Length: 163
Ligand SMILES: CC(C)(COP(=O)(O)OP(=O)(O)OC[C@H]1O[C@@H](n2cnc3c(N)ncnc32)[C@H](O)[C@@H]1OP(=O)(O)O)[C@@H](O)C(=O)NCCC(=O)NCCS
Image (cartoon, rainbow, N blue to C red; front, side, top):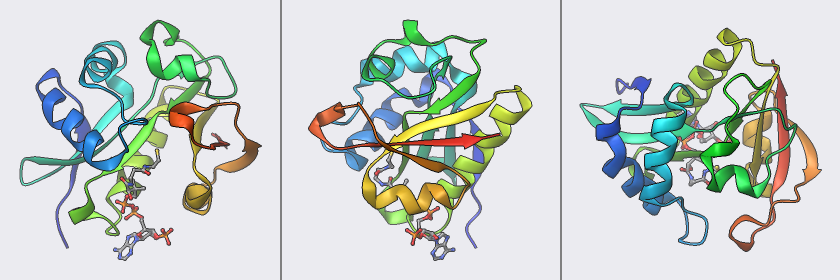
């Protein structure tokens, strides 16, 4: 079994994180390098990376909010990050194709859930496409129905994990 190291992001991970995002998401949905630079500065404690043999292969990131659902401005503007807010959010979960279906995203998610629990957050919120509802449900997330988000022109579902 491959050995995966999960750790907090550092500013030097920026280029690779943006590269992975561009591989994992279509251009209309992918966050830009500038957006990641701001996120790494604003909420490094909710930005975890997965490393194999010193190479980044995936990551998870999201801000903290008092909102019970994700709304589009949250993605775009780190000013919406409320460090003492009640809910953690997941903006994105990425693993490069060569390393998928080996539980790496699951390890990232489990560490993220642990961080949010330790910080005393009430829940974790995310939006996902229909095809991934079952996957997030496997961690205990509950489907709250179609999201108001129109991020990238796609249909998204709100999901919540009560901690
Ligand atoms: C979604 C994504 C992050 C999943 O990454 P991953 O590392 O492959 O995820 P996991 O390995 O934890 O789980 C994927 C599947 O592999 C299965 N799996 C996990 N460990 C496994 C193992 N050791 N052997 C075989 N299968 C395994 C999981 O059960 C899951 O199956 P399912 O789809 O039937 O539920 C990845 O496909 C990705 O980056 N996609 C593009 C971006 C995206 O859509 N992100 C999510 C929206 S924010």
